[in-house]
Length: 339
Image (cartoon, rainbow, N blue to C red; front, side):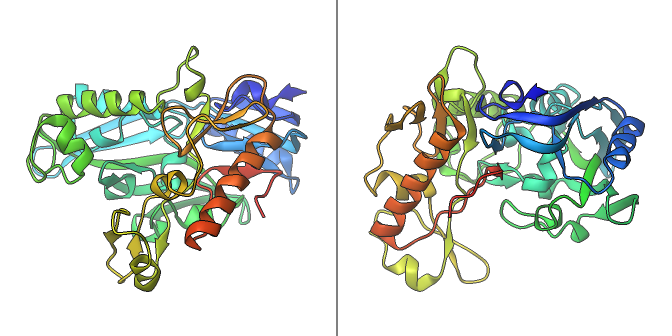
């Protein structure tokens, strides 16, 4: 049996009953079909997942299919079709090296391309849904291939059609539409603008933007590193809550507020956690709040999944008691719940 702690960035998780590594679309589909109706868990980089200490009593399929197909048109830009198993940050790095713009603010996000549309990953003012034109999947229910347009993906903040139908669709490849050029879109995220030394709304080179994003993520322990236990995490553990205007009005004046198109307000999970009394470095057993960023729950060495879950529950309880706001996990929970 494969120990799943060897395949997750949190380095926790028990054994998988069956474990299969696949490197081609044909192998992916064959592994899925051979599993029949038994539970399967699709893994890529294992960077956004918390697996219980009991492991997974089904088949884990680890995808590493690498594919990059490129079509360039001087008018419409570049269309790139990428295999689900491709490393996300290596893909972003490649797009910049080839003279394409768009994904630079998403630099440094761990994981694979296949996970990007499921989570609708985002950072520093942009989400991956802005650049996806289609997602090709295998439908386990219909036992056939299905391609989704951007609209059919039903993207929203850290959510998608694939996430709301867990276990049904397995992403095979993703197509992206990118601009040809060396400059970013206007920088909209104030933290990034300040770090770049420009005003919000200004443009910079995609290369300098990527470098600064990687620097910011490194400061927060959000770049994977063997020697930095603050990076032994699953990234941001909770999503930023989107609350009603009435709830937002009750928050302290210095709480971050980002108005949404539907009249609701997004606020910062990290701010809520920090102002509820949870501190950087706080721990339960081997599980620890990052010493750099309160939104990351980390393995300080020898942690159990149950300890990380307990620490997550503590953060939820503190925020609920202080602000009457429920934090929702961004991390995928396998064999665990925070209720």
